[in-house]
Length: 237
Image 1: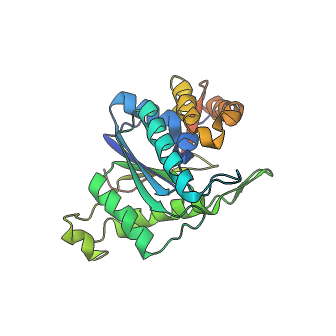
Image 2 (image 1 turned 60 degrees about the vertical axis):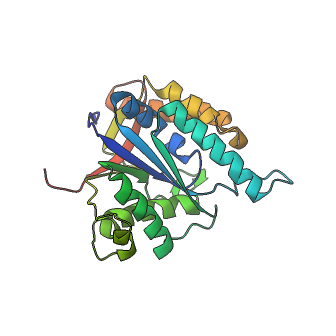
């Protein structure tokens, strides 16, 4: 049987594409870490403006709604700060502009761990195709870890802003083949409450699936509910 990870971090940065992605990906872990004293920061890469098929909804209107929803969800979980980079939903790219923008956040926050989507995930089982933006978000997180955040000559304009290079010690990816599990039995209801704040996305319809997934991971490690990650330790102890 796999084992639970009891790692503690002073600070964490969760990198994700759209409002609500973090809650689905790691909301229980975020709530647990915040309770334990971790300063959790969010970085939302897109404006979430394509997340509706309702006739008459504009991108500008939806972006405002989703930012409010994300801030409310983060408050439920105890997130310290939410940064919105505002790139267009559905068109996220890995380029120098997006890499620079995320690196700016990483060098400012200087987190002990970055949590992000697994960029290699193309689909899940036979019923889900991964969103383009999710894959790009994961790749951008990897770029920040290496080479962007730790390399002095990468983005010298950030040095001019007083943002010195930073080597990220830990990277956790929300992966389908995990090796690190967090017991979220005591915080799953907070995860669901945070998800409920994303009313424009109808997230409450996914509650049964969220519970079932957490229960499957929990069964792997001998607890009721868990969240799962692929963990990388990137610096020598």
